[in-house]
Image 1 (tube, chains in turn cyan, purple):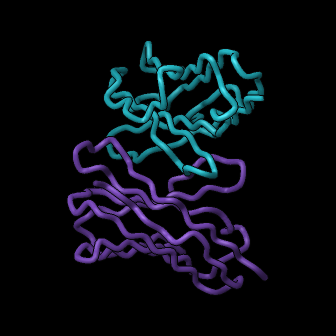
Image 2: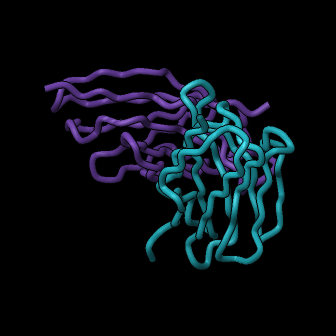
Image 3: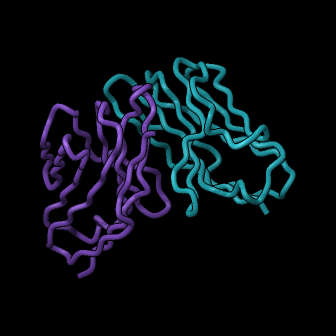
Length: 112
Length: 112
């Protein structure tokens, strides 16, 4: 398996634009997580899904953030409108029974 | 609430042993994990320990768990420059076995 796949790897956009981050979890994993990492706040859990259903979205900063998981092999995290303070590295991770949490390479987002 | 704490920095000489420490608050945690993050990369699962174990060894890595004191440590024997990275401790949240709570990370610097 190729591991967790995220796209794009880098995104630079202007304030106010919509940003969509994509994730393909490892095949067979039933849980998917979105994390955000910044120098100031470290690693923060935004939302996670189990069997495609959102379980805990308490970490989503505000209504500008939304996440979907339409099927077991795909998830998106959308920010609309984006703001400079959203600049961070966004990680997707997936897990299955006994696998531990396995991370993707991340998407580095810069909002100008 | 759930909280995981780590010291921020550790500096060691190449060839020496490194010990990275972590304290956690949730006594009902079932699994505790160590992750490694190299610059510009995602988090890589290094090892984990089940809560009914005191020690786990995996090549140069030794994990020690003191449940009474809620203290976890990662020892790296014969530390190499390639071990320079940020090391994260994580525990499974007590109310949800899918959710990991991460520490702030310890930056390990190995000098020749």
